Image 1 (cartoon, helix red, strand yellow):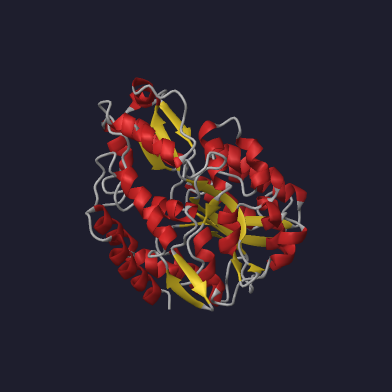
Image 2 (cartoon, rainbow, N blue to C red):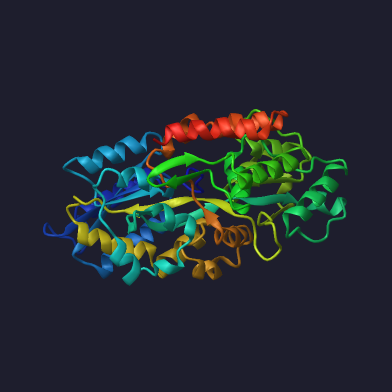
Length: 415
């Protein structure tokens, strides 16, 4: 997941590197140093400092050495490290990246620890499922974030909307009302395919399915077509571009500067919105993307991170213990509260109840899913035939024909 809240300083990295070499009280030349790769900005300076101090105090024979990596180019870097001789002991990876690393055959199987020590049955499906390959758990869920509806309270009040919508049908009616009251009902870019994926899943469809070991694109299934049809209805209740995604232009700027009632985004976008328009500070609210029925929100794409342990890790046993701590209730609670992330278990949603945006994310995360668990899915995202398919439908082309063409391209990329 690339949207992060806080950056860690170079000073902290240096200090932790020293502690990893045993140059702190309690260290010694015989200490085992667990080398950990984390993604840049995934955790705050304060969280990592508190975790390191507490863990090394409880495990005086262990030192932690953290190295931060950039998301750009991380796939090739991790794959190279897994095949090398000096692989790190523990690596944070995007939840949808686990399959491509598992394909190397060089990840440690954490199935036993998952069931015995980590309460796998309660994990968020959008984090747990991508970490499981052929029945083995290689990725341990760490944290999540997902899209919600961010709305402007004053525009809802102006339109006479006093209760937030609980169903997709009511949401359409409310958005139409907002769109006719002098504001744009919603800003939804035409190629926001992660949002489309949620509607497809909510209809019971998939982007692609594994049929006997062969992946096939399924955007042309009846369920997936219904998801696209709903997306089209919603998108037309605003002036979002049909041929661009949510970053072109950044929807945070558009939402901040125009009378737009709603956007669909992770709450991490809020700082950028407020930077562009500080007057919105007390006007922003959040609700889960409504589902087909009122008793559950819409399915959503779950972004986030899993933790993996390389098979060749020099301190593999110690690394597994660090994973248990990071994925356990105490530090999950600390991480969620300090970083506004969704914890890795549905049973831990209570720890973020006091934070509106995170609480709403957690409501949706229960029904979260991830992209198809294929090692080649990264290629699909790189070329992304889903985006032009969406634009074609929004411009009036035949949905079935456009979906079939996109599905065939996805199939070819996944083989």
